[in-house]
Image 1 (cartoon, rainbow, N blue to C red):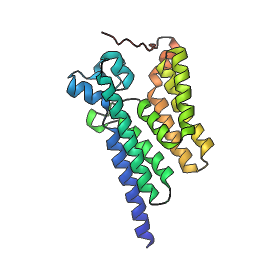
Image 2: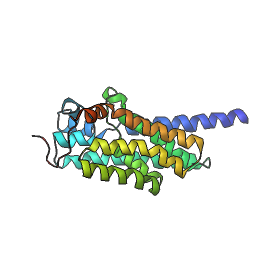
Image 3: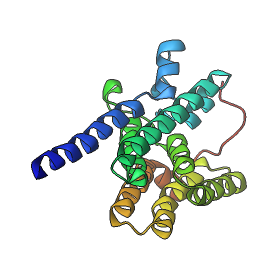
Image 4: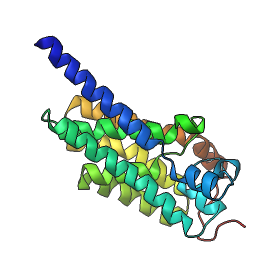
Length: 212
């Protein structure tokens, strides 16, 4: 009976990780630019497959498609995680577990040569799906810093860095905290080039007008 229980746990964790990862792989910026516009966003600007670089490069109504894609995949992954782990009595753990692998898929998509985005839009959606208190801290700081400085990357760094700490404040489960630090750490790591540019004063400021 014990062996069957461990097998069930393995299937739950492994199955959710695989599903969440491949959901994360559906990168809106890459799909829209590469297969609709026939001009891969990763060959422009910062080379990042994220919303900001897509908007700066292409602009237009297709930006909404990118947003929708990156939001929906995070919503679906977290909902599946809550449902599967809810059957084991820990829906919250399922949300964080799904969140981690959805972000990994977004950042390192296997079908796009492991070159994806930085996880801000999907990560922000995940924060909203997990807890309104976490979303308030993550999104509040992001919006304030971005509006005041016009550096999206600075707001993004706040989002990534604050996520594990507000999660720690809201939940004392050690595994939840570890997963939260993994998620936040991934976001900060993906912005390492932005950190260098911020320190050197060469980081691009956000503008409502995309580059021609």
